[in-house]
Image (cartoon, rainbow, N blue to C red; front, top):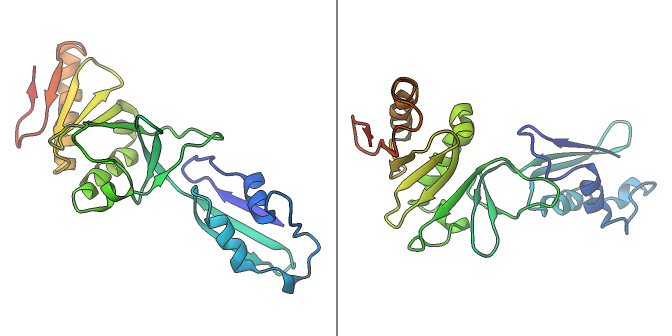
Length: 215
């Protein structure tokens, strides 16, 4: 049997051993040496896909007669900070549990007590989709992924960020006009901070059209 786990985004939630354990039910069911007609490939795929960290699995028999397994992992884009148990959110807005095996380097998200739980439903309704799009934008942008240390959603649904470098809070407003707001923020980082100093301002607001407010 050959197992290939896709680590396209440098995620290591599940490896060869974990996949093999899923296939053999922790070693209880030995697949090696079984006649081909006794192996239900679709059932094996479903068994692997039942794992929260698996996005897709393909199990097939090669020309050599061996079983080949391809696994595509889920991609977390944020860590939701909760009083009971933190969870990840993947690119589709589904929650994923934390893993003992691997910790994803993704943006932590906190919320006001006035905002309902940031679970599956939140990111998949018409309101939450904008927040998911914002998180995906950050995850896919090398600069902002490195610079933003934390995201917070206040009671009015407005977003603010804490940066990795600098003492300021970034007031982003509602998760709309995302690219335009980050363009303004980039002007602040490239043209204002180098001149005025990284500790000059306590807040920078890019919420309103055609202006940057620095205080």
